[in-house]
Image 1 (cartoon, helix red, strand yellow):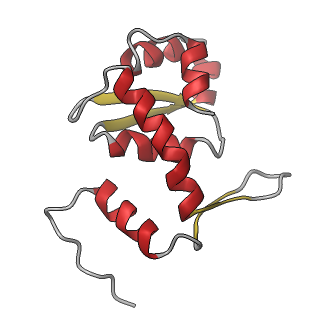
Image 2 (cartoon, helix red, strand yellow; image 1 turned 135 degrees about the vertical axis):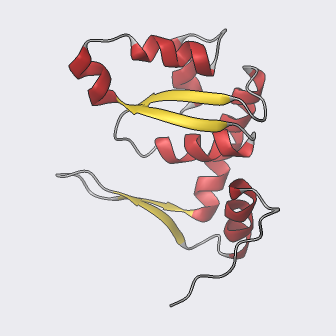
Length: 129
């Protein structure tokens, strides 16, 4: 199987958006955690979840070309947040929650300040619902 050529003048976000328009009912992501039932994102639901998160990121001042750092747990809400960062044209770097726990660091607070300088942890929770 060969992969289709990727146009260099389209962003990753634009490719995802176009794919979602063509195949809204297809599975986009299957999130699985040992012991749990898989959580299945279909393209339409995933893209619908992206919109309020992207709006919240823009309200918080995240702009094209900026870097967003996130502390994430193994959670299905990560995927629309990842796409939302791409939708606003920012770049994502992430740290896994276990890294912050194991090092005893304050990475979560740092990530919140980098991602949303004027936001609190409560604001982040609201943006990822």
